[in-house]
Length: 232
Image (cartoon, rainbow, N blue to C red; front, side, top):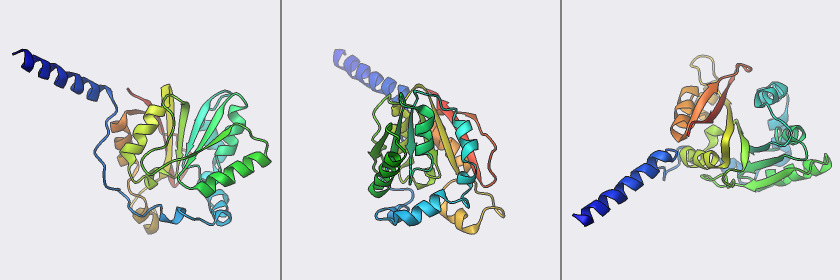
């Protein structure tokens, strides 16, 4: 009987730990294999034109997006999937010298470009973080805001990746996800095929990881914005 009680107690402790932690589904296989192959050795100049050009809706609406982020001096922010730094640099200006912006990306060339442009603009509060396909490599309790723009559908292991984001956010931390709408007859066939999930699926997945939807600011035509907070 004592042995059975010990086994029961151990099982109960493991169950309580599981319930107290964000849900991380087993995900040993990529949900979007090959989607990031083109970023292994990109032409940075070409990507700057693509990511920061005025044809891109998030570039057109950058000021509106910055308002949605509600950045304050001294905040620590992670720009996850920072790309060429479209938002990294204005984030750095907003949080000021007392804050930090972590430029997180899987592409070393992009991070080198961000460091170069930040140096040119005398922005000294940006730290590069080279992530992996399933881990942002952010330290636990290190950020106040996680910002993911046009990148969530590129996550090959979304549950594992977002679990690391959840751990990195402080207790009152916030999450902003911007991605493409998928609407039959409205969204282009190319984007319908390229983007893995729609707004509903993204919201459901993030909820399972431990986030709660706050609101969905309606500031763009072809893209949605999810403003979320930690629910546990």
